[in-house]
Image (cartoon, rainbow, N blue to C red):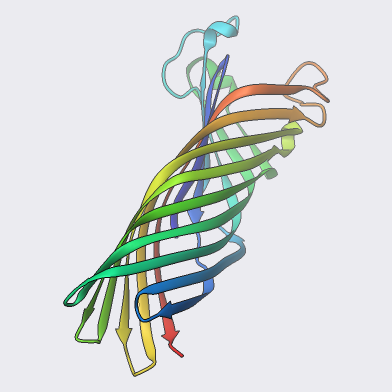
Length: 278
């Protein structure tokens, strides 16, 4: 599973966008209950333990210089940083299909489902670059710098088409909309003693193609490719649980609310597995 989780916050002095890569290699199990190739219920669980990510967390800051005396106007990214990552993931899903319409080798129907996703990150060894009037912000930090967690509740409805080719190869095409997506996240900036949380809702879409290749009467090889896009928006809050060394005052206990937030996700999944039918 590849892609990214990203969240954007917009506030009085500018905008910040963070991109957290998805680099997941899971092991999982799926249980499917079916009745006469008409009704199907699928339960799935996949998990990826903590491991080093091949990607980096990227942070883009766009700052309104008019709010900072002595800083000249500058367009584009003002401060950019990236950090190394450890990450893990957990995905639980339930999906049902009903295929009442049949014509020769093709069955058509509808699907509905729910998926829970959790992504956790630990960022470290940050390299930061300032541009234009913010060149003095160029710096680096070794060791842990932040942790991030995002949880998704994803509901789907869609159309499904299935075709059997000489009882050897079964193709299933799913095209779904994601009419209700709820996301919460938590970003702990360890070096600034600041905990940021967001709560967003929105929608998206997903397409998937899966195959079953018959090896014997009860054994199959399965594959699946899926592409999804999600966009949500909501509110963001920041709380300083300690003094922020980047400011000249004691920030402990300070809280900022009513910050606009957008959380997006784009992913591509590819899987292969072994299937046994009872």
